[in-house]
Amino acid sequence: MNIKNLLPKLTAILLSIIALSSCEEDLSPINSEIIGAQNFNSDLYVTDNLVSFSRKLFPVQTNNLPSYQLGIYNNEVYGRSTINLLSQVTMEVPNPEFGDSTELEKVFLYIPFFSTSTVSNDVTTYELDSVYGDAPINITLYESNYFLRDFDPNTNFEVPQKYYSNQGPLFEKFLGPVIGMVEEFTPSADEIIAVEDDPETEEDEEERLPPGLRVELPIEFFKEKIIDKEGEPELLNNNNFKNYFRGIYFKVSSPNNDGSLFLFNAAAARITLEYTFKTIGADPDAERNDADFELSFKGINVNTFDNELDPVIASQLITPDVENGEENLYLRGGDGIISVIELFGDIDNKKILDGVLVDGQNGVPDELDSLRLENWLINEANLIFYVNQSKIPGGATEPERLVLFNITEGTLLADYDFDPTIGEEPVNAVVDHLGRLERGSDENGDFYKIRITTHLSNLIRRDSLNVPLGLMVTQNVLVTDFQDLENTQSPGIDKVPAATILSPQGTVLFGNNTTNSDKRLKLQIFYTKPN
Image (tube, rainbow, N blue to C red):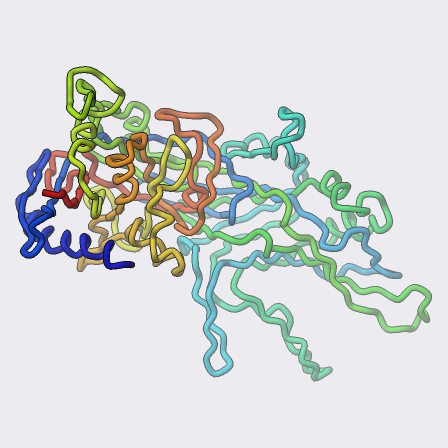
């Protein structure tokens, strides 16, 4: 950071201690002069002239995500979410040759969790990431007869096909036979020993895998579906194969009212067929050879959501007060809940003409027009979102990060690209712009500070369009992709950050219309004005 940018920020920090103590509820310019800087006044301007409300999102696109989910997440505020998965499997090696007298010995499914490893005294331990809950779940694997297309026929096969979070009932109409079942599975951080040393041969055959879901599947299905099809057109290439074996549907249920959920990288998941064979033309008494054949999950994957939303919250989301704003802001990931923030309200009785405000409308809020005439240098601008702890359980269930984005354009704000922490690990990345949850001494969340200095400077000094902003929870602030909604909803929401779909958590924040003036949503503007 250069000196030119640093001095105004240091000045603003010193003055904010004095300024914050005397902020008024509405619009509060606070004047003070800096010794040795007679040519400038640095001040704090605070406004709660905002409108904020929440909406339940329309179904969201859930293919082409950076990762996928499987399981059940029970949120004490919002209710239970069940996330199923339809996966298109592909052959790692098309047109396989299995050899002579092939016998399929075992079949394993392996879906690794996200985790980090630590090695001490030759012992590897793992810490899980993106695993939520610790109650058992049941997983049933079905063969799917639903064909997942790469391209949309309604666009003359020119645009990639999109699949959405509400298509579970459609997919389940095309379920084939049960391939296998996993009963009472609970995610664990334990290392998986896939192959143990053979004490008879004294050969080092041990294979260890990072934590994940690893289960043995029935042999007969894969023998008939794969091994017995050697040399047939169905296995000639993956185009043929994807039409022949159209996918696997993972359907999750709970033995009780709770559950657990995990995220995973689909490209790292696999089904391994372990078989033995004889070399063609080999002596009948020759030893059998061991080999593997792998099916990957690198094709199309689609998450489907079944949400049980609290009826009281659901009714509030149907008809939010979009003119005056709401007392509470609801946030939940998945095909979840978004909060909308509109800066400076919607009063438009004035317009700028020849450098002054005159009667008339120009599509710009009057307060923003007034600020544009001030010729301020914006040192820092913050939105402070206070957590309504009376509405949530608090603690570890609270999302650590939120993301703010331009609803109209479906893009992140300009402040994102200028954040110097963008190269850090996800939990500590982009914290200058999208501040982490600030917690109290009881470890419950207090507030999130979202810095929008560049965005606001563009609004005031460059006459940028004052667009509605979307606020959502996020699983990873470094994921910058957006996913489409099935349909556009007011005020012009047609896409959301992909990482919000991957975050099962939720929270409740104070809005602009709460009676709690100390916790009310406000916009802080630290500025410098030339004398």
